[in-house]
Image (cartoon, rainbow, N blue to C red; front, side):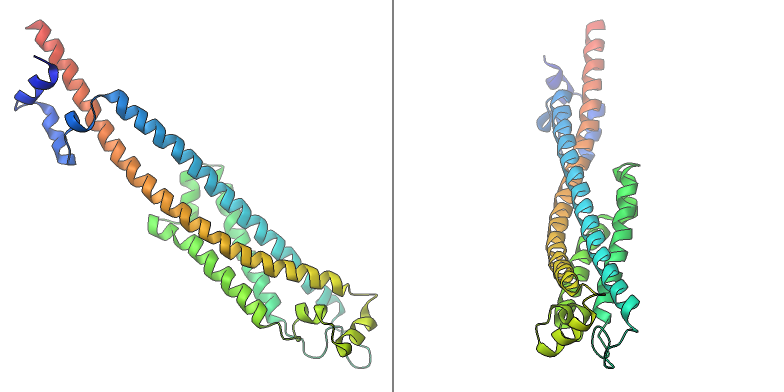
Length: 256
């Protein structure tokens, strides 16, 4: 009589406790080796997901750094030259609109700090980084959603505010009256540089918002993987318990 059959006929067998998990290890997992192989496969999948998380954070960090640097350069150009006037007009016209630049700079600064903290926490392991990023699985979803909303809104408002009164569109303007003002300050302010870099920051903010979608996809993969991992841990525990019982039963049978 096989160990499986003998085990099935023994109503006092300890393996019956595993039925509390909702499955029969005799049917679900034939031996510990199979369970270990599945666990190893999940481990490799976890490593790939972890690497993808790091990549996502690095991209967001670089985007925040680039946009923040551009906004800092733009504000520096304005602050240093704001009191300069020619014919009663400043280098960016009368009453320039500054809030789009400040909003973009603020968003870049906040996301830069957040992503830097998460990446530094990765040095202490994935769990430490997850604690910095967020708490529960659903709270973790708020991170990419937050990036999507914040960067999407910022890109939208930056574009909507582009009416010729803001620094970006003023620097890019080809209107004769604006060009005349630019010529008065061309030795002090590089309008072409401001135009190109601010245009680049706008595209970067759009790309960052789009890249946040990848973060949401990563969250989905992590959620699925975590559930599989918990299920596999239960199966491993049940399989080990069953294997130990089978070994003990076999030894007991030989002694009998």
